[in-house]
Length: 381
Image (cartoon, rainbow, N blue to C red; front, side, top):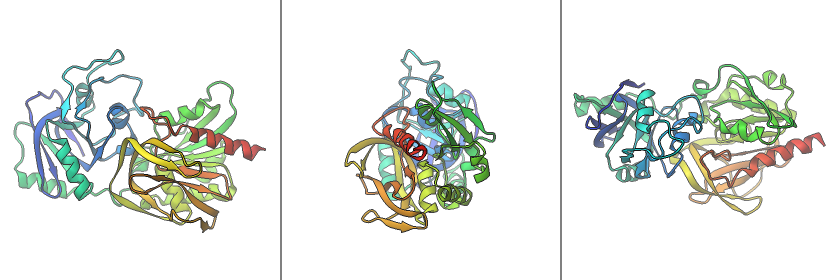
């Protein structure tokens, strides 16, 4: 969906076009060309490398609310995957010169190298307020010295597919299974279904003595149990959970066997569907590294990292009976009461909607990996 040419100049004009007809004019940032996706905003003030390389952002154009982006450049240690996944990138004031001892190149250079079309010099505050009021919507970024007329650009944006109904996890997941070995003594084996997994997730498990077998999104129940897992994990990923019938069916198979189960983000939505709950699209979603969530099992409030545009429709005021036993909402967002976690009371399974691996921070929710280990310990006992 992206066409580009390398070697952008700072004065090349660019236009951001929203599907409702609003235009923002600025300068090209990254590659020159055109790109399309869903316009969303991220409130993180740091961690832009992790954001750009998170597979959950596939087919999304990310607007950074922080005014200055690119200050620390780009290094080779922080990416969450092997490539940038965002469809486009929107910043107000890009750094002119990066400054960090780990930096290998500038963010602008990295975007150009990977062919990611972006725009800078626009009022991202006004754009963010527009998306908060109107909701996430389709968008296009056009850059170059000879741009199409406004009517043509708007028509192109309106012809692109919406995020609702998009089945994307198989597009970003690994095609072949691979193993992340335990760090130190191996204590457990986990089968991790890759729906768009971030690199830090198996690393966090490996730090706890877990050997992680990362499996494709197309993995079956038989594939999962072929590795003799002590636990099963379902990862984050892009797209509409209402389309994810195969992962839902696989998760039901895992629940029937009673194996300890942990899901993150898309994995939380898959668990919700597997238990019989619906899912729905949020108006503008949660994205950033400063979202307050309450763990209702302890009463503690955590500052957490989010990237989701869909949520589970489950009652927060009572325990629900399901075919797999009783379920309660374990976590809620304190901004809007969105369901942020589920916990089964009769089986060793739980999930959260946010990202406890949070490579860029915060680390308030890292205990959830220990909770997963405790479930596996309990199962062995």
